[in-house]
Structures are given as structure tokens and as C-alpha cells.
Image (cartoon, rainbow, N blue to C red; front, side):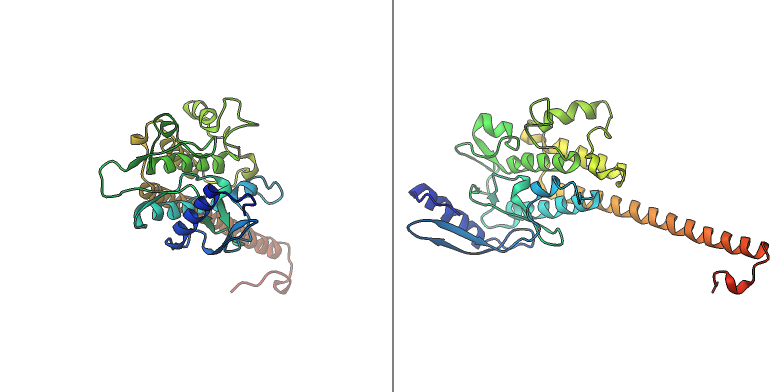
Length: 287
């Protein structure tokens, strides 16, 4: 909602409304309507009970598991891929960040806030436009900042920062990041092979290390300075699916081992009961 009515404000609101009206994807927030009067203007979105990812990452009482973080990343990536590949004409979001990833009650992710989005021509070889630099510090593509040349890879850089936040639990700039920003904080630690030092301590040991490494490497590719070195959102969606499959497989394997141990312990208890002369009826039944 905006209380200061101005020609620019109305223009931006109508631009976002127009963008939202023509996008339809399960991982993009739905626009219900908009209102403009003398005192205020507002966009009305679907209600997202889970809040936003930025706040969820700060929740110490119920921290997100690695599996939940991976699902959120995967779903957000699918929404962004839709904007780049399936929208007609395609859209560059320009403000991808954790506070613009909204969550349902079941932690399903939907990308929001299209106020800064720009149309680009997907039929040309060079898919970029010259534009006034906008975005959020910490998420802003450095190449775009220096050249004013916007492309889909600018969204990829921002999404890479989101991935680093999901891995580390740290903010992209400010407190807890001594080197100036999160990208600069992470890279030297990874060069030493020290993955454990960057993982969000709230996750404890509840993750598959191979899955974390895979996503961390992906985040580093996304945040390369040269946009030409960054992957497309389609490639990112595929890699995140592989990482999620790794995590699910590791969790199932762990569950299988635990169930096996429980079965072995139960059998041992039964044998001990008989050896001690206890009647069969007092022990656990076996089918």
C-alpha cells in the first residue's frame, strides 16, 4: 500500500498490476485486484499465511530444515524460470530477495513484488536493456550496477544471494558479515574447503553434506561477477531438483537404517527374555 500519491507512484503500481495480470504460475503470487483513490493506492494479493522467507530464516524457535530450504529454493526458482522463459513477453524481476519470497501455511514458496520488473525481447541474441539501476543492496548484480545493462542473469545473481542466505542463515549485508557482503564472506571459506563454517548452525547436523555442497557450488556460479559465467534459471531449476533428490535419498537411507536398528534391538530383547526363563506371553509378539 502507498499513501503518497504521485504520477510515478501510480505508474509503478499500474506496471506491477499489469505484470501480475498476465502471469499465472503456482510459484508466483496471485493478484486479486488493485485500488487507487485520492489518499492511497494498493495492490491486493492472495493471503500468504507463512509470511516471507526473510522473517522465516530469523525464526530461532522453529528453524527451517535443509529439506524445507531446498524446497523453497526449488519452487522460487521455478517461478523465476517462468518469468524468463514462459511469459510472453518475458520478464526480468529486478528485485529478487528473501523478503519477496512469500510462503503459504505449508511453506510453499511464491515469488512476489513485480513493481520493478521489466520486459525484455527474447527474440534477440543479447537479451538486455539499458535502464536506471534499481534493486536492493546485497542482491544487486555488480555487472548491472557498473554497466546499466540489465539481463536475466541479473535475476540469477540475486537468486544466488538468496541461496547463500538459505545455506548460511546470514543477511546479505550488515551484521555478521565482516567482509562487506555475503558473497565476499563465503568465497574465501569455500576456497579452504570449509563448508561447515558457513552452514547455518540452526540446521545442526540435519542435512546431507553432498546436497549442501552442490547448492553452495551452484550459488557461487550464480554470483560470478561476469554474467556470461552464470547459469540460466532453467539450469538452476534442474540442479536444485538433483540436490533435493540427494537430500531425500539420504533421509530415506537414514530412516531405513534406524528402522533396521530398532528391529534388531527388538529381536535381541526377545532372545534375552527367553534366555532369562521368562514366559513367551510376557515378551513381544512376533508375526
